[in-house]
Amino acid sequence: MILEVANIETYYGETQALFGVSLSVGAGEVVALLGANGAGKTTTLRSILGLTRPRRGSIRFAGRDVTRAPTHEIARAGIGWVPDDRRVFPTLSVARNLGLAEKVTPFRQWSLKECYEVFSALEYLMDRDCENLSGGEMQMVAISRVLLGAPGLVLLDEPSQGLAPKIVQDVMRAIRKLRDDKVGVLVVEQNVDTALSVADRVCVLDRGTMAWTGPAQALRDDAALRRKLLAA
Image (cartoon, rainbow, N blue to C red; front, side):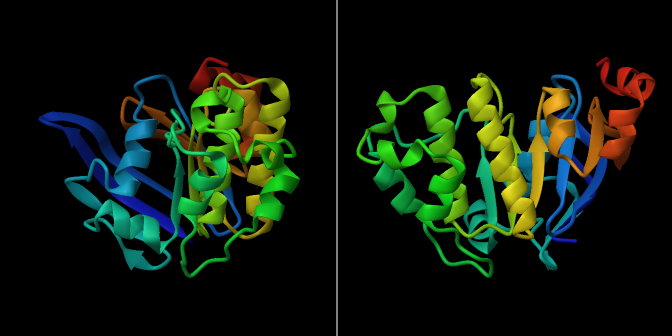
């Protein structure tokens, strides 16, 4: 497994947000992390990244214990993150945003040409400042920035949120290409159908605890189970 999260307990101050959460992601596997708002999905991603460090439990990436590692070391080890608000540098050009992302990790770095193959419009945005982009265009930049950073694992937080259907299709294609390239993907997604269209396995959080984990096919095939777990 490229990522192993074991029994983490994470707090915001004295308020506990995660209660013994465990999950794993294999190299070349897409795992969807689903659940209602406030279930702990984003907190799980933040815990993996060291942004909200768990008080108990462990996190291993590529065989290394990163539970107490600082966030910049975790990123340099090969974990890429696309947050729900994209966090591009608004006053810099697309080219500059992408250039800043390039780094050496133990994993393969994608080329700009490969990014263009996924996001066909990206090539024509390179000279634009990011503050002048649409939400969908910013998402192209945010995902391409992660790909150029040579990830072994990509964390995606609500990647389809607010996007036009064509851009959502491009994002899902990027996820599939990551899987084909043996990169692990952990994706948080409110749109259950979108998540199930690309996921190999699903983890469902409920109020900070792991309520269910299993193959995505089980939820695709069983509407009653999907309603029980996700009200969807």
